[in-house]
Length: 229
Ligand SMILES: N[C@@H](CCC(=O)N[C@@H](CS)C(=O)NCC(=O)O)C(=O)O
Image (cartoon, rainbow, N blue to C red; front, top):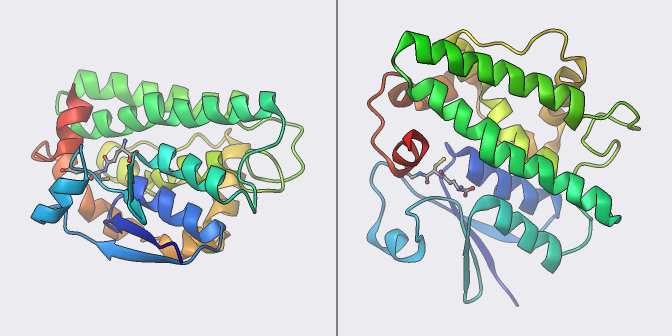
């Protein structure tokens, strides 16, 4: 019987992606929680970037949340979390990539940045990216609130965890989603109700405390180091 084991930290939005994917696919899995402030030696051996999540599947060790989630999709195709059509699959990957390469780094950089003028520029970048998700990501003719309408997908799962943490940007940098982003606001409301997000969720107070060291510029972990580059 093959065994899936998620090595994660509850605080981590990337780990939440994989946790949500495992739940959406109703897979049997074990969760090993680690403290990122005091990583065990065995973890350093299995995580090449010293980051969570890591997924162990029998002898296989996988890292990078979007790649792990695609592996789960390939290995356990039902229920499908990517559309069938190649063009739609490409569209899905474009927005997962946008989240990884644009939105999430800006999310961290605006927190890490201590200089007010740079902070304002990064705030403008966050708002512009939110507007782009609204205008180009969430298409008008969908038959439901998710990226591809009625059915949740790997795009929703990739993007949502940092949106659960938007209270952090509001609290430390006064950044709110523009009210004109109605599709985005509906999408967030739908994602919040999803069983996979409810089972992995934390409230604003938890996230605000967790990101304090990013916001005051004292975070020293691998993520802070990489995001500053
Ligand atoms: N690109 C990675 C990012 C994972 C990541 O940054 N994880 C953070 C926690 S949210 C981590 O483990 N950081 C270790 C550290 O800061 O020392 C992924 O998608 O899995």
